[in-house]
Length: 351
Picture 1 (cartoon, one colour):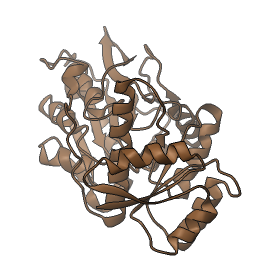
Picture 2: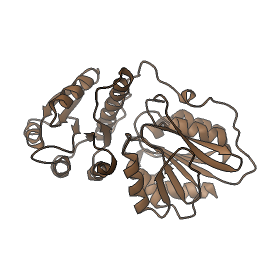
Picture 3: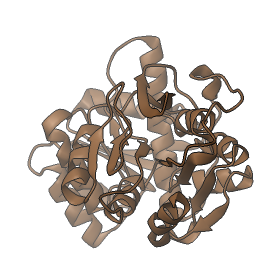
Picture 4: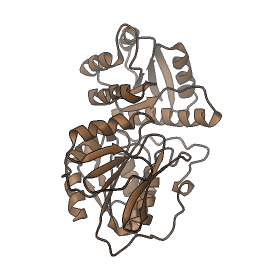
C-alpha cells in the first residue's frame, strides 16, 4: 500500500482527494493536514510514501515548506493546486525544489471530468511512489484504455521519402521537465524542428515553455493549432490537448486538438509518435524520456517500424524508468542512452 499525506488548507479538497485515493486498492490516505505546521507534526509520527501539497496555504506557503522538507526529510511530493496562468511559474519552482509532479485540484464537473481527474491523480501518486522506492508499480487498468486509434487511424506512412528534412519528436512524463530542459538547452540555434509532449496539466505548459525559451538558444513556445515546425524551434504540446505532426506539401506543422485520454493521458506521447510515424516516417528522430506507465511505447514501435531513429533514456538516469522501459520492451527503442548523451545523438541522427 502507498501511504499518502494530503496537505491543503481546504477541507473540501482534502476530503475529495481522500475519497479518490482511498477508492484505489494500492493506496490510502494515512494523514491530512490543513497547513505545513500541522503536517510537520504528523511527519514526526512517521513518514508516508507520498505527499500531496498545495502551494497557497496559511502560516507558511507550500514552496517554503517544500524547501524545508527536502533539506530535512526528502520524500516524493506531488504539487496540487488550482493556480494557472502567470502564477503557474510557482509550480515550476516547486519542480526545481524537488517535487515529482504537478496535478490540478479536482473540481466539481461532469462525470467524465471527474473520471479523468481520478486517473491523473492516482497515476501521479503511483509515479511519485515509484520514484521514491526505485521500482515500477504497474498502474491499475481503467475501464477502457484508449490507444492512439482514438485520435489518428493507423495506416501506411505517407511521408516523403525523398526529403532530407528531419523532425525530432520527444515524449516524457514524471521527471520530464528537467530532462527536457537538459535536452533542449544542448540544442544549437539551427537544430531540426522539435515537437515535445510532456504530461502536464492545462495552464502550466505555457509557463514551462516560457521558462525553456529563456534558458535555451532555440525558440521554445507552447504549440498552437497550425504552427509550423521550423529549424531552431521547439513546440510544446499544450496541457489537456493532443498534438499531432502533420504535413502539407513540403511543410510540416502541428495539429492541436481535443479528444479522449489516450494511454491515460492528454496530451499523449502515443498520439504524437503515431502522427510522426505516419507523416514523417524515416525522417523522424525520436526520444522517450523518464516517466511512469507505457504512454509512447506503441507509438515508438510504429516509428521504429517506419524507419525512424529512436532512443530511450536509460534506467540509471531516469527519475522513473517506466515509459522508456515499456518502449524498449515493445521493441521500439533503437538505443538506450544516458540523459546527458541524448541531445548529441538526436543531432547526429538528424544529420
